Image (spheres, rainbow, N blue to C red):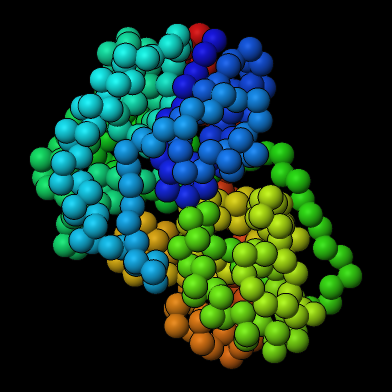
Length: 360
């Protein structure tokens, strides 16, 4: 059996998510051969997902940001102005060289649904938000109504869509006839890197795979060395050394560190959220200007009591005051909520079983 997976190049989330699903698909049917198509993060994909063929090709969805991590609306508007034409050309190119596939997975590349329809094979969409919702939620909107409709029309060609908890309600309503809601999608086999013998609060600081908040995190590094009650774990891309700072190699996955932490501070990306919930580690979430996904994630987690929020300016300039105060006033309740939540985390297994029930 053969499966081709189309992955957007916006961050590492889709790669990590597909790794979890591939592992579950292989557990049921070890004879499935996988092809991944992406461009920017192919090196990371080959390191994280083993024994797959990788085709280096950009799959059209693109996000432009400014140096502070906020959306570059002018560039985004320009990029999507002629998107439909490029999409049609992309589909034609894919059809001309399309190999033998039994099913497709899209995370979340719209053109895959049309490619599947034209090849008469099922295509399964997996995401925690859709780009028609994301771009359509921005103000001002960087895309026209015509393109929004084009996106929706392509999704109509899907066999089934899988969405985990905290998916925006507007998406669930729009695609309700296609959706199967599933538990959180995380890897079952995590290579925990425990750090014992550290008496301070252990705090993991996570940026996105695309490095959206790198500059903000770099500005905060000087404060960390002054906070003797805390031991910080940060990417080795961050410059600066101190006795209470441990650098994480680029080849390591942050999820391998989460379980042993007392707190995770990071951008409110869905993978980070899912992994913290699965491993029951409290989160302190960073916002991101004009990003509807981050806003939605933070609102949902605050409402459910599973996450707290730290403004970017506090993180950059006043973490030494903010963090001890948070530990004294909000941390224990957050930890209690994390230990007692009832979220299931076997979404990858549920998806794998459902897909193979359909294609078998």
